[in-house]
Length: 102
Image (cartoon, rainbow, N blue to C red; front, top):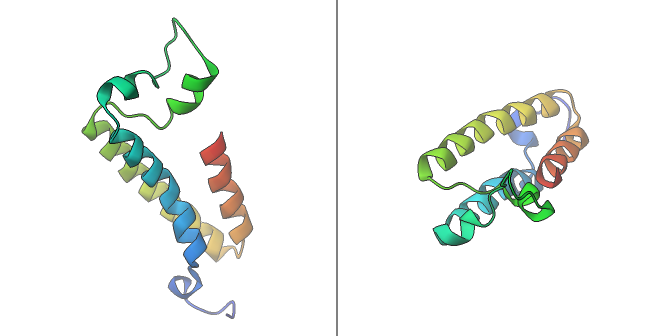
């Protein structure tokens, strides 16, 4: 693949899978019973390491989940496009893994 190829020809399957991980995780968690999701929400009165991490992926209502997924889609596609244009796919992968683990 040359550097002159259009951006859509530079898209790699593993990048698409990487982009889909966060939506898959959040939608999967949303499918859990509400009582289970509530135990994953961060509480300022009783903070824990577990809820500090899981609260980033928990949504108690569908509107909040949809809003976050739409924003994520806009941001991740923009960042991916910029990284492809800059010929810096590695920066994109580091960014996505950092977001998923931070």
